[in-house]
Image 1 (cartoon, rainbow, N blue to C red):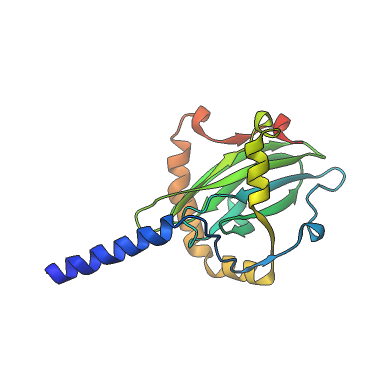
Image 2: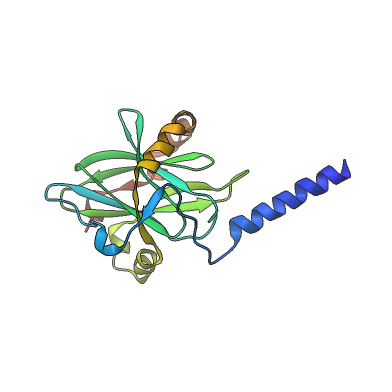
Length: 202
């Protein structure tokens, strides 16, 4: 029994070391690294864009997946490893996004045409692996040195066929987390639910 406890303790210690190891970027899986010149980081005329970025190295070994919920169905935005960012172009208006790790969390957005918006994928410790939340970057933060640091800390990635294959293969689990944690999110006061607002774009 003692040996089993020591084994469990050692595994948990190793997990925490991996989870909290500073200065390490996550491995990009099922996404493609691209240069800034290859990325369309501003929306087409009449469209909106949201850039999801994860500058923190907390939970670097765990990737986070971001989805847009359309008619209660998750559509993959991108898989966001530590120190990466992904641009997502879409129609203006009301939108709902979800980030998935050990759990799921949500963010709404009210987007205007011809504007680019930004949101952080923020990791936190879970029971067995990292959990994630979406944090809107508001207009008051866009000119800050911290915002510049976040942008510069992250490399661009984009979806591939492997990204969509991964999402399809894991869709049952993704939808289970969506259903379970949506109820938790909706139980919060409206002021506690993160939202990108029209003026937050640039």
